[in-house]
Length: 315
Image (cartoon, rainbow, N blue to C red):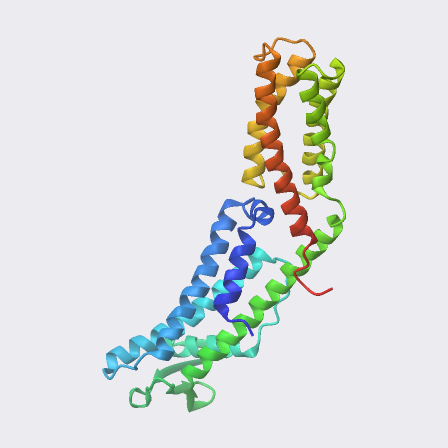
């Protein structure tokens, strides 16, 4: 079984993947709340580890601070879990175990509202028996209007481990749904290769170079430049079909920005329009730069194709 830390890291990697970050960033506040919630979940897990592994203080005042801190932290972590799920998987149904309810009730009675707790038509008051406090737990004395005096042992260490297990179960369910959704998306486009958009690119560069060196029909240079633009347009359209865009991947955006100007000038040059390119020698320099940029873009397309080919969950 994975630890809470391992699951949290998987979710962070998922959320910052270029294919997912655009969607998650669509509402800025939700983006910040999402990661704040996950930070709180992780931070409180660290605090619980410190409590479990550390020495319990001898001073009663310090003991109270530890107990108060543990229950307030567990309560806060539950809220963070709830907010996190609603943000990343709003339609996900969470079957909250009675364990979490038990912890909330223990927190409300011992730390939240000990002097007057209204619950299920009853009013009660609660106190921690000082002499029973230990790292493992404590005895709670309760008095209710209906039932009078009662004693209840609160197993602190046990409740910490139960909530940790429940958090792992809930977040594992989130990961499972995200994996299934991601797999379904990739399966829909697995056989549609982005790299296929560039099948004619090298042939186009051959014709452009042959034209510029005087060894090909003049019109083939213009055809080659238009083919380069057509390949770019096809690539962009396939990205859009996947719900992505040129800005989804920084390297694609940078390469498009680098390609735009020299390709525009080369297309003008071949059709006799006014261009920065005044000679075939200059056009060759522009073409060589374009060939390098396209090569990088084609490598990126292949990497994306490989990512879509990979299966992250068993079919």
